[in-house]
Image 1: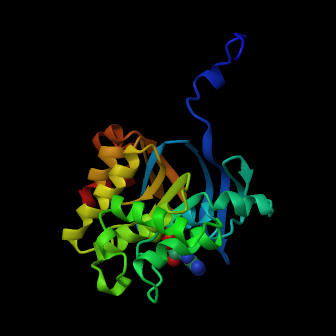
Image 2 (image 1 turned 45 degrees about the vertical axis):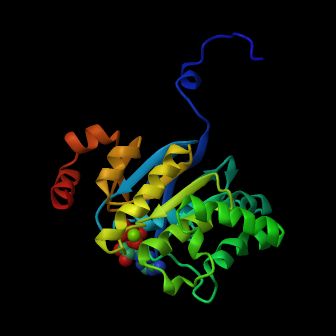
Length: 258
Ligand code: ADP
Ligand code: MG
């Protein structure tokens, strides 16, 4: 038990430990600086929506978090592990970071079930039976269990994206990153994927979602970040972001998409 001590306001105001801490993150491709010093703390269980114009660096930012891109400067700490220091521990920590891409990125030559059991078996060391049991459970949760034997090309885009979410969840991640998971879908399939994401949000998952689905943002996000030209220019609760965006650029952006 903790004993009572002098109040520490800076700690008292912190509800949950940080899942991700980003400080002064920079990323350049050659001479072109995409991320210009990003500071961001994502707390455990927090749900954040990241939006902004095309080319503003949204994908680059979340790809740096799971090291699909290497940062050019700054610091990224995931679950207490500094990713800028190459170590076996950082690879371990990154297993807890799941990612869902715009274009699903399922393995086309593998069945839905095999897509879902590959990493749990090879990375987590589960037996085939254990991995299949877990895969069926998550496929059931996303409403795809009956399609487990099919190949991705036999499924609709919405179904494929739900499989991609189930596949990520089979690794039992602590943090989920989404990069425009519904923007490649036909409009009638957007809802079924968002429903799965809303359910996931309800389960307490830490989520950082790049999306322009503002209904989703209103429904589940605690914070909306607006990225422009490689900088976070707004970080607000959805109500204030939608009702009174601070920057002119965010206002113009919202006027375009809403
Ligand atoms: P967003 O996801 O917000 O649309 P991105 O993070 O994909 O933005 O890209 C930000 C900028 O970085 C864009 O101008 C893009 O052309 C550039 N960029 C992204 N990836 C690369 C790359 N691998 N090589 C060179 N430039 C890139
Ligand atoms: Mg992008």
